[in-house]
Length: 175
Figure 1: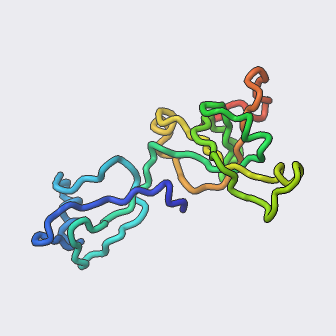
Figure 2: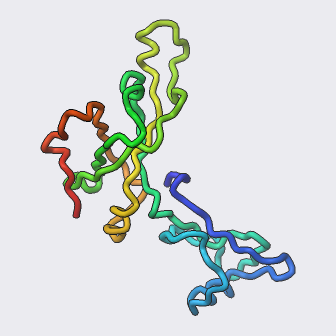
Figure 3: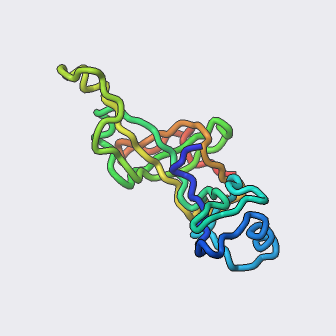
């Protein structure tokens, strides 16, 4: 799981009032509003186990933020230089190759991520790869929240020429 997707729940309390995980989970089960996550999300795993004593700021649950889902991929120099923020992208997940998910470019690294040992010639500079993120619209995520999964591998396609239409196989197809 990519740690960029995860947000930990922080429990704020004083050291004198350290809570144990049993009481926190009981309070959660009883729908008490004493302990709230900083944002909505899906519980990925429980960090604190029943019987553990938590100090101030202790982590209880690990949440996946389903409002900010993106795919990270890499482009060579010649393509990374042509991609602008907000450019259209399409994502196809290995787990659901029948779907084509629309996304927008939200990040292009300012330095190469993969660099050959020496960069002396133009052909060597062409091997530089830049990290890029394609983010899925939060409204689309909310509409299909039951199907949203993070950490799934897939392929990203970026339209470098806005004047060209997406080919038929990359037209948006959602559940």
